Image (cartoon, rainbow, N blue to C red; front, side):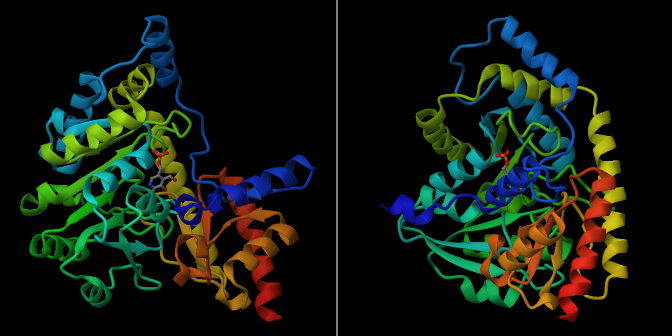
Length: 389
Ligand SMILES: Cc1ncc(COP(=O)(O)O)c(C=O)c1O
């Protein structure tokens, strides 16, 4: 079956499960693996869902989403992202992951070519293949170390059949944000080639460095060709609630809505009420999380500076650092396995994010600061032992 061939179990999940299993066996495990905030969903968000349940919001609802939430999202996109969004260009869907699928399903036809920049979110390739098994994938790695666009390779990968370019900034796993030069390059490519740009901005609100987030849909000449995906999982600690959204031109939105209707019917209405509370309610927990992440990114930067056997780009946004462990001479899978067995620290092998990144591992900063500090100390010891060997 094609599905069986294109869809593997998520490697990030596999590593985290192993770490959890070792923990239940009594091992002293520090998990720097999984991609979710290390705090619980704020109470006012939970209360809004409970209230909606009490009020009977338990039935099918409008497929596109509650008007109130679509308007709030459009307002957010206008204010924060400079996108002249209208509520009817927004779809509320069960998670950003689902949004990525809907976007790919709406745009891709058999034989269409896709440029997927790596390192990328582990689900990008399976989602693209599930949405259109007949698409042709071109993997273009970002430049090693700086994680900026490799323009020559992108230009070489473009063809008259290029239909879609997939980007994610702030980037999982490299922590890189889209800078103005790279954004201008993408803007020119999309305008000239008339292809689509799928911009996954799920980590947008988690700004570590003092850099402005750039949303390509704010560029008027390509606005019609950009699908923006975002959600609530990472900013509001709502990973388990399954809610996200798309913004796109009305014609594209109509196609995504048809797929969404057939696949999901609607996103649970009481969960949408929780999302309303997330956007419209107090932002203090999010601000505190950003403060925590900045402190942890500084800890990570100091660790990298003090450890000659590793290197890493600074974390600009999101909650991941991408650490070069090539000095061990091990592939990233073997390195992550040895690290877990020897030191009890769980990280994710770089190969999961693209085959060019087998000398890297992903470190999550969404762990308690003390745990992160201890985890980095153990990684330092591991590197000293293995790089010297
Ligand atoms: C880059 C990226 N996009 C999308 C998602 C999925 O987000 P959601 O929980 O909203 O489906 C993740 C989650 O890890 C991610 O890292």
